[in-house]
Image (cartoon, rainbow, N blue to C red; front, side):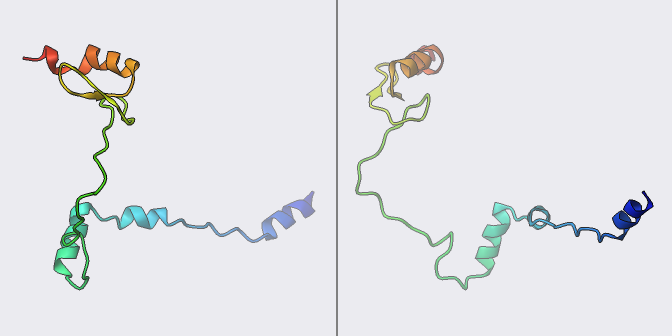
Length: 101
């Protein structure tokens, strides 16, 4: 029994590994801090303020106002888009603007 205690006490302790999460939380930058840093250092040719994209050549995609899936139909009363009969029912019960004045 004494041998077991001695062997346990003689084993080296395992070093605890630290994760990068600590540093991410400690040195986290907000979006405003990042923008301010980009404004002060204009060494980069392309940054958040100079980014521009031309309009798409493809037609606009329409999404359901209830669930967010691609939609093919519109509400006759208010023009909102929906994808199926179930979403139409939800829209008419809760979201349709025809009831507002």
